[in-house]
Structures are given as C-alpha cells and as structure tokens.
Image 1 (spheres, rainbow, N blue to C red):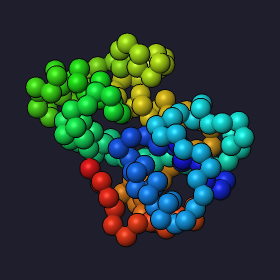
Image 2: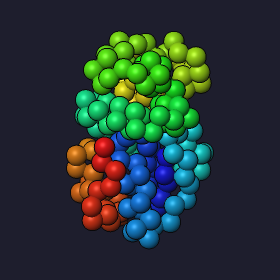
Image 3: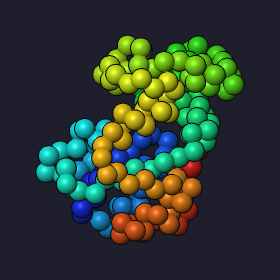
Image 4: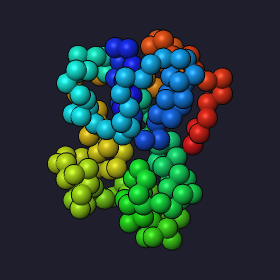
Length: 165
C-alpha cells in the first residue's frame, strides 16, 4: 500500500502499482507510508479513515502479465513466484498449461498462501483480489484508464506508462 495525503492506494501486483508509485514521486507528493502488496487489513490505525483506492484490471490481461513477469524473472521470492513455480511445473510448462493449472487450482489449500487466509474462491486473481481489497468503501480505478484516473487524487501521471506488462 502507498499512503499519501488522505488516500490509501492498495496495490495488487501487476495492476500498475509501480506506475502509481513513480507518478506520486514525480508529482512531488509526500508518501506517508509505503508497504507494497499489503491487504486492507494491514492499514495502520492512524490511516483507517482515509479514502481507499484499488486498481482493477481485466483478469485475462492480469494473467497474461503475471505469466510473462514470473516466467521472465524465474524468482520464487517475488510476488506470486512460488505459486507460479508450482503451477508451471518449475517453469517447464507453456502459457496455456500454466494458466489452466492456475485457474483450476484452489489456492486456499496451498501451504502458507497469504498466511493461510481462508476464502471460498478459486483462482489466483480472485483470491488475491479479495484478500487485498477486503474493505468497505473502497473505490476502484481501471487499469486501462490509470493515467487519467490518478489525476483525481492529485497525482500527475508519468508521460509514458512504464512496465505495462
């Protein structure tokens, strides 16, 4: 999460969080708190009444981005890396088979998945989304409109979106 002024940005990986973070810095705004990929339940008490924002991305686009990101870095310690390593059978499966494994898996049963959070949802995108954004009153901006939507919060977007995979 990134907290500025009166706003908490909850960051689900592969939804433009780095772009928002760099745009905040580029705008000269003071970051009050930074702890990426943390759920709404971890918002520090002093910021609980702030506006809460999340970025919503087309799930298919998210899976494509997630696949290329994880396959490219092959690092199980980064966001979602352990899950990807298991679902791609140690990076040996192609896109279709890996994504099929992800979509057909129940991630709530994997060891240490988000500290054993219990959800009745299947699919990595849905489980991650619900884990991070489980809070009343959250406002979502669309990934495809991220440059224009962040202006509403006083953030000047970078001229060119970076890392759009």
